[in-house]
Length: 455
Image (cartoon, rainbow, N blue to C red; front, side, top):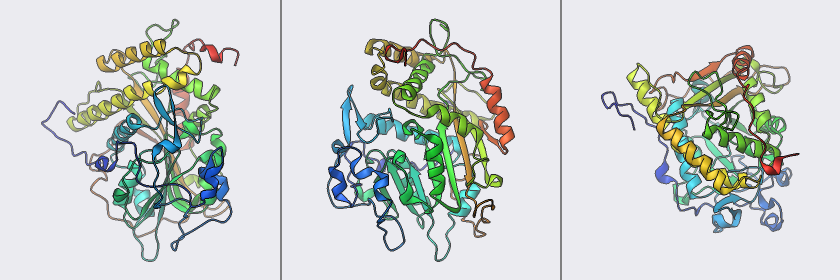
């Protein structure tokens, strides 16, 4: 982990990875109670719009669209094989796989985020206040694009008095006995609408899901409608262009025009370009909209909104005079290097669809791995964060936060502030930071892949 052992840090991430099965066979059945819908040829049981009427709810008001049921099921029913990897069958826009290798990558990524943020979420004081235990009230949390379910599980154990729902395009690989009674998982595609969840949740968490979203502005508004008045939404998603060590200038993707550019950057650039042009992903809109924050959203109280840039090094190349911060950066960098070294190879199946050969992609990936291992072209990756609370009504502020604040968990603030988590407290500050970075995007784009020429 860290080379300097004189000042060990207490990571305390509580990732519950021991509870995540890497066998790829989920023991929790997440299929809909409306079994008839599973006979459809398209998004079958997971179509959100199918549940806009006749919503089933249990005694505490939670939806019962798909909970822990007794009908056995496995991953193969919900995935297709392509290029040696398994992909979900519900949404062809989302370009990353759903298999054992991907589950392992996502769990490491989760740990990296948790260490960098110093906990499971930003805006810790607001989250703790909203989810505080109160007599006669059960707060509810929605995890959009829950992946392996690791964040949902960790949160459900940190806040055992709350109810949690995790939704994703594929079943989570979790043994049924490891799912707490206050936690459930559902198959769903955000693109189909979330009307069955409107006005239901106190906190909504969305991390790295926008690759599969086709109309981000529409989906963002739909997600905000799922909040109760005063509820908090947290968005975290990626900037698909790599940054130089100064965190301001973008490092160009490697090409004939930029032979000294980043090969890792070339792979992420091509993945985004293919996802947008071929898969109809709205990644470009997401980067623009989330970078601007939620201040202008009609449903959100601008006084409660903040934005942030979370910078993570790819590899353990960053130094810091503070020994604890140096160790933290070493650990975060190592985790995200492993994440990205697995992730860029996961792009291959999708990139072959746009005419790039397996030989070319393997060459690019080998070069990217060498960069990340030898730190020959060090880069930061920026994750765009935005959060805020829903208004009490049209043009009204959000309701006051509950006065009974939950006691801090051992995880909260134990690592101290992460110096590369830059919070923007106003729309103007977020705009200036984004404009300063975008002025450096002067590099020449690589030539279009064969299948996108003339697209």
